[in-house]
Length: 257
Image 1 (cartoon, rainbow, N blue to C red):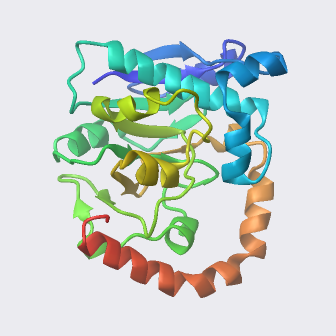
Image 2 (cartoon, rainbow, N blue to C red):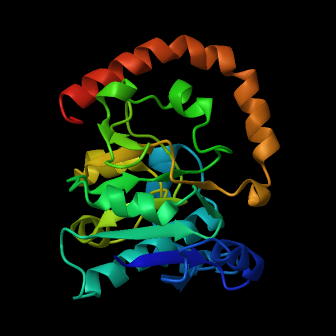
């Protein structure tokens, strides 16, 4: 399986930290597209900012454009690689990915499950623990005993109650699934808009629980703000949890539709 690491050329320390982890020697580093110094004219040629505004109700940042363009550039590499089969997964990670213990063993076990989904989210951003309570409260899946167990591991895969913005720290994508992205004249989406990817591109997306990767807390500058926000809205989230759980159970029973 091909593995790609997206990293800005200047981020030497991040790459050193990433490659200090076991089983990372087979990643291909992709130099992330740095749009911070691009002129407005160049950005307009590369990215549909008006369509972004229509979808998200705000202006896109240069960093968000660079992130989306970087992932699309990796998709283009995958699409052109004749050694990759149409139904074969590729792993895409960002350089702040922190892997769970025995990551490669669990990843290999996952691939043996013959999952049919187009995208499998094995990681999530803005989470500081692989099995954080926030995952269940805010992004629930079905009951643990109804999830699909990954043989020989303590992990499982299933559909969340609905697709959501989970970040792009680590995910699997099939070669066949990159083509709808590349067929668009210009991108206008956030790189982790899995809601759009389901609705517009008809992609099937599942998640792993616990997570196989998180955003490395030592590199997560806004972690404290996230923790504070999570604490502040805890009761609001808890009130919404029963309905989300019900939706998750229903979605998994009907196969993610």
